[in-house]
Amino acid sequence: MGETGALDRLMLLLGDRNAGHAAAVSALAAASAAIARLDQALATHPLRQAFLYRARLDAVRRQAAVDGALIDPWHLAATLEGLRLRMDPHLRIINRGRILDAARAALDLHQWIVEPDFDQEGEVQRAEALLAAQPATLPPLLAAAQGFRAWIENGEQRAPIRSALIRFWTRRDLLHQPIPLTGAVALRADQSWEPQDWLPAFLGALAREAGDGLDLLYALERSWFEARHAIAGRRKTSYAAAAVDLLAAAPVISATSLAAILGIAVKNAIRILDELQAAEIAVEVTHRSKRRLFGLKGLAPLRDVVRPPYRPDPTRCPGRPRLEVETPPNEFGPLPPLTQIERRAFDYTALEEAMTHLDAVVRQVRRNLGALTTGGGPAGILPADAATIGGA
Image 1 (cartoon, rainbow, N blue to C red):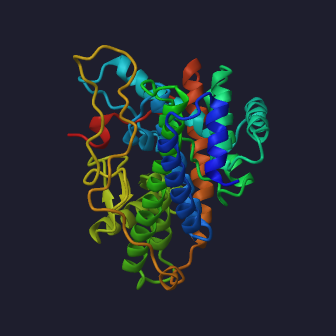
Image 2 (image 1 turned 120 degrees about the vertical axis):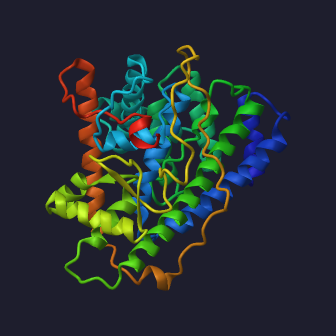
């Protein structure tokens, strides 16, 4: 029996035979196609580790927003760079605390996905067992939907089942890489929980996340390729190529971080970044004299290509964040993928060291934010506010 028959059985199990059936069939087909396209593009892609790093940060930002801890991508990127919170007369103390809390919530979700601790791993394995217990005759997407819904209805935490979903996709051979597709917006506050409404919404959320992931992958490889092509004539001892690799992997990076990764003096890192900026390979996103941040041209979050960073509305009372969790559509459409010949033109080995360092940075920042909760952490590890990173 095909997927339509399996969908009939699932709708019956969820408590509705007919309502929403056509919408669910359409959503199932769209999700299956979008996920297959992303999996095929990423299967042997040389930039897959850099893609996964960025995709995880974006996934946990979406999840945190749905859970009531909305964080702007500017703030999350700045948090990972350890910027101080600039004293802004328009930024109240309560709003500074919200930025910290949102960053901490996002990086806690990141830990659930990447390296859960002992207790978290136990919860994830319980969620995995529930997903594995779904009927083997159900296709992976429908089995996941049924297990996910059962977990939430049992009053369990959201983070374990999200992490279990990522593992489930690879164990059921739907994906070959642990791509963080979790259907985050299907749990937003205004989403109907009725089966005929929720199932298409969950499948549709997975399809959109997969589509956004494919756009990110192509934008990442195109920006990286153009940057490496622009510096191809430099001498082999130059650190410019390694700097480009790091800019591709990290949303933003400072001269201090670049110097630490490459093992060079900070003044040399500043010179490299300034040269890349002059060559229009990198873009400075802070416009400040100290602790400047740079990003690879064409990749977000960048000052000139994304919406302005969030600024608190002084007339709005505290409450649940607005449900602005979907990435706005790309006005110019996705970039075309590179050809195999283009991909083979460069050496990708420097990316492995970059990714190892960036994962370590996330762990350290998460520990620092956790220490701040008890008042024992380093005061300098704080996110930058809107005026520091994207604003005037």
